[in-house]
Image (cartoon, rainbow over all chains, first blue to last red):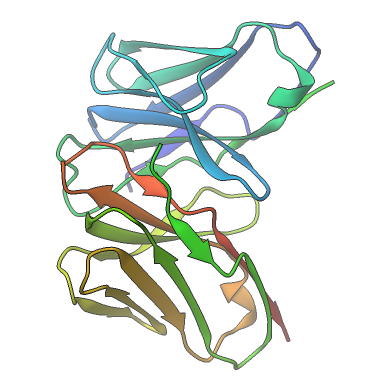
Length: 114
Length: 112
């Protein structure tokens, strides 16, 4: 079964910490995405990547960076965590040109910054 | 960025009732997708629509791609408790962007 795996389901971090959220997919997908999900705001795109070492800003990139050193792994980095970054973070992937399946999502990481 | 207007934001229904939700946009889309997110999980694809006017069913779920290419609806018939969750519409624009545009979701609660 194809999968997008996010390394942690729940994380609690302190304000000011550097936080790494990891996402790995086993489908050889070119495209990978990071979203945050907040009640009433839906899914908001933070960053995405079309290929290794390639990244583009989404709608809300401030306070975040990303790394894609290998095709299967896309990391989201909170350089200095703040309480307003408490949220559910979802990783997704898809093949270039998409195919019929749309995005495949991971199970999410619920991050709490205290 | 682009937005999809999804309604209603939330629904509280009794088991056995039918449910309808929809998404509209000011832009034309060439693909519409409907996802369901169970509590504490990531969204999972329910139905994908690729042609204007297309009507597709998946069990008790039926979705349609609007003829104007600017809207889509999802119906759930005879709801059951496990239908609880958040339903998202998503669209891909004519330009062939690799990115999906998402609606804000419809939160469904089913009372047994």
